[in-house]
Amino acid sequence: MNTPATEPMIKIEDVSKYYGSFRALDRVSLNVNSGEVLMIVGPSGSGKSTLLRCINHLEIPDEGRIVVDGITVNNNEAHINAVRAEVGMVFQRFELFPHLTVLENICLAQQKVRKRSRQESDQIAWQLLEKVGIPEQANKHPPQLSGGQQQRVAIARSLAMQPKVMLFDEPTSALDPEMIKEVLDVMLDLAREGMTMVVVSHEMGFARNAAHKVVFMDQGRVIEQGAPDTVFSNPQHERTKLFLSRILR
Amino acid sequence: MAVDQEQIITSKRDVVGRTNLKQFPWWFLIILAIAGYMTIRIIIDPLYQGIFNTILQGIGTTLYVTVISFVFALLLGLILGLGRVSTNPIWRNLSISYIEFIRGVPMLVLIFTISFAVVPMFARTFGLSNNSVSLTTRAIIALVLIYGAYIAEIFRAGIESIGRGQSEAARSLGMSRVQSMRYVILPQAIRNVMPALGNDLIALLKDTSLVSVLGVREMTQVARLSVSTSFRYEETYFILTLFYLTMTLVLSLLLQWLQRRVGAKG
Picture (cartoon, chains in turn blue, yellow):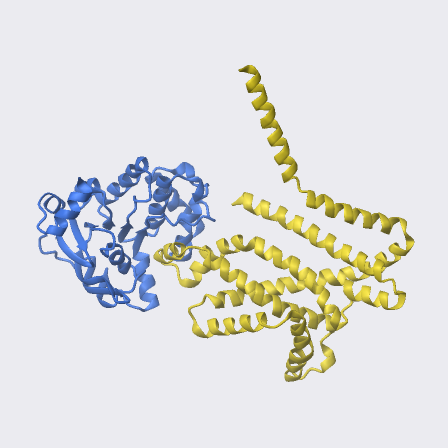
């Protein structure tokens, strides 16, 4: 990276997180620049999801500081909500609201948080459904959709808030293999449009095609980081090599 | 071969027929038969008819007390149930103490305590005379306070049945705690607890008979008064039983139908 003229979009400084005596995050420091796609890989229990969830304060860091778009994430409820409105999150299990239709899922937060009119939020929702390729499902309820379709709705729901950052927590790992591509395609489009993204995933294809930087985590620490090609084809650390040999095969 | 197949088919049909007989709701026929017998007695026997008409005078009060108590108990239950899962320690602890207190005392005792101790106490504080609160109102207050605690536990269970991911999704979209509860968690929780709430409505209908101890002229009290002069114990109490049985069965069927309609919509 050339020295960025502007502040990074996400600044993570010396963040630690404990569950009892278990150290889930151990003095993690990371920067994500605007428009950058950062991919976090690592074995399960390495703290990658915890780190992601600290960025929008679903988990509260015990030490350190996280700044998102100039707002420091602290325990102040108003600050937390301000950060969350700028940070979209996509979950492994979609977490669509099953009592609402697809369209209502995408409109709810627009109306209640962004205070948009029904008409305006509807219009945005339809545009986003076109973008993720499933406008014909607008009036169905989430359980009637396939996993891939549900995840695309979840992405549209986040995008409707016009976030500056999108967080993806293993977005394809609950999907059947034939549905992974349709979700990754939507994510690729987003990356090309210059969305700042932090992705926890083991989709190496996505990493090679879209990621600017890959971070390898183990036991709550950042072990190695760099361009995807460098990290994948020429890992420096033993643990990275071992992990990659297992998932790349 | 052909014969074998035919045998298989007939035996299959036998099995199907037998399971159908096994699954037929015989219990419903049995209850219907008992109710039918009683109904015929009421129609043909003038004595039965007289008692039937007497008890009928109490049905309005029974229904009125049930409906009003249930509506307010739902409100109280929602407030207490939300308190039960609240992060606010004052609200949470007050809710838990109230629920545990009510659940630890027999209903009949509570009806006496609320009607003859709590309500007069409050009436005095507000400068009202002891007689200004009617017995029916006291009965309703007692049932609301008791069932509010039971219904609170239903709401709590319903809220806890919704996975944490749902509130995380709502919060990550920038919704506040209150918005997340109101628009995402509660609508799902309420749909999940509809059957349990229906059960409590039926239980409440039956428990209105307890307020006869206050002298509220609902069906049980009317029957008791009638018996004290007619001494027709058998006829009166059998007919009273039939009244409650019919009402709970009809209510139960009504709730099942409602449940199916709501379920079909979702």
